[in-house]
Image (cartoon, rainbow, N blue to C red; front, side, top):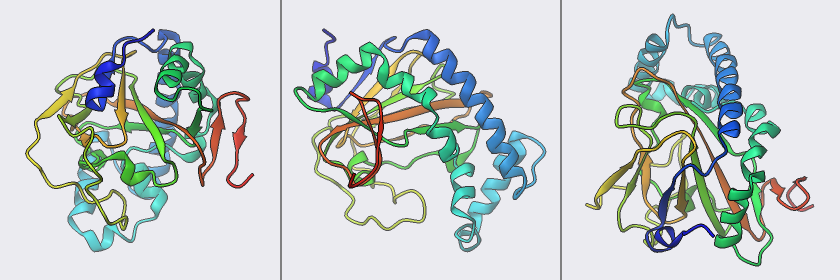
Length: 258
């Protein structure tokens, strides 16, 4: 049985080499292909000559908040490194919840309960120096009011070092009450103010996974490398949901109120 005691105590845990290498390779290839499709879509609205040029254009857009708010929501999603809804609903991402080790984690953290996967999972690509792709400090509870008992599994499909960046967790915040009371936002929620907790950058290898509970304060680390960061995250839960989910017994998609 996998030892998840660190997670139970601290609200986060890096799990070493828990994702099958074939799954990592298959999803990485898929994300690379979908990234190119996304960049082609962006090109239709924001002309750019290179990845660096695009990131400069994004920074220019951010400098004028009034104009930025007028951008199409789907375009803002893509500029922040999110792949399309169609990409995120692709069954290839179901390889992760179907993996026996991931199912064991679910059984330990949600014992004797029917485990479900929120749809769609997140699938992202972060270009070097894309400042808009960095998620501010937050707790996942603030983004997921539609489910009660859940945990998040964040998976990188490349090496996460100090340059490529990944997830920064704030130590000793795994049991804090929710810090953000307002759900109003243009895209990201406003970041939680710095409360003085120690920040830990979770460096990882492809094949590792990061467990996060719904209370732990965390944020994105910037990608200052010359590599594109690919990742996905999955929200496993039990109980009811007002949004679509994947039933992990039948492996069928269940619609709200069905």
